[in-house]
Length: 61
Image (cartoon, rainbow, N blue to C red; front, side, top):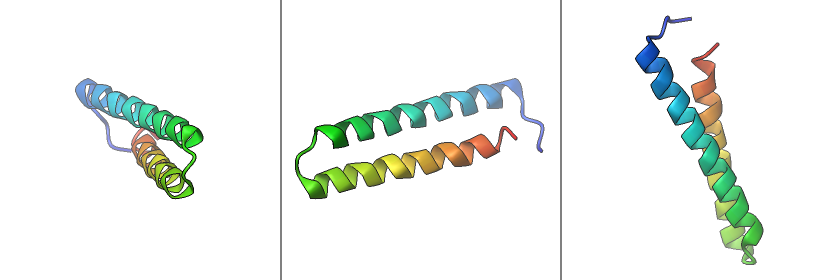
């Protein structure tokens, strides 16, 4: 593992939290949507941001 500075860890933590918020928002919007196409698109965006979050988390291992 690469040793990250405090500043890098803080930035990484902030970005992970941002990605988690986006996942929650897109999932919430998908639940409120009645159009299947839009709902699918919103779920796809949530999945993409979850992947971003998972990738960022690997830097903490």
